[in-house]
Image (cartoon, rainbow, N blue to C red):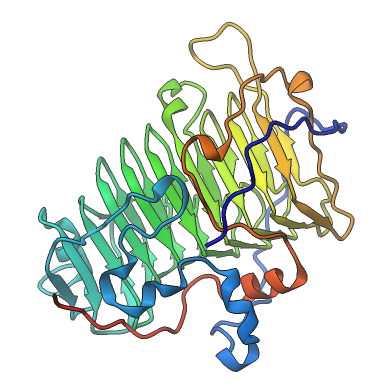
Length: 380
């Protein structure tokens, strides 16, 4: 595992960037993803590319996944200390269903014995100390999504989310006051609201190796300017592929967010948006513009307990801007935001590499749901 870059403060060059994106935007036409529906066979990826992805050893045994997240969600252990729960039914509820396992109060490591689609009629609430482990099967959630409400130590791995319908329906909704959450290797697309929302004082969360496509408002961090309690939010997003999604990769209010080794291409409005008091550390990401060229946007809003409106701060270190991408960066002096965190203040190491064509290839094909076997349970 590579060490992080040494801590250093850096002032970025300013660019003329608007303070807000347009309020009215034309309808978004969801287009087909250019990514194959099934990951390419291992023979298509040269062996030397494998080290580009972190925690590659976690598929060696079932519970090796627990506690292996990088970043703010690194403490998430899920159902490490609980028994296995086997999902044997694709029904929305009832014996052997995913909902039945998620509602139980004891720690559980949830695995699937069936592949297919689970049609959710309502949000599926996940209680604390759960691992939802989709390795070994191909399971898709549709209709509604997961809700992580006032829970802790949850791991969600190797699932697909598609076609959520209804007001305020997100693929994964993390609120309120949830913590120690890890979302890993999931594919998310086409929900009526967000794909992942992290709000209402939820914190210490990592999103890794996920694939986002066919969507508008991708990821919201921080509810709205009235929720000043969201100043506690801390999120790490790494090795994810934002594949032609329109905006919010992410959009951040108040929170501290570390982005590294992600690939964001062909956005419709912006790639990343900093709003009221947010602190975004963008490190070694690839930003590849389509028609819209500006990657970073700033939105000015007024915190409920402040007299004047403010925006957020973005630091860019080692990012790669290609295909005519304009960073849109503003200096801290210009934004009026004088506080900026550094990841090393919160965790000592993380796996980060310089952005290259090879790393882009890996993120194209090795993010989201993966055709990997369910690892064996190792007993002491």
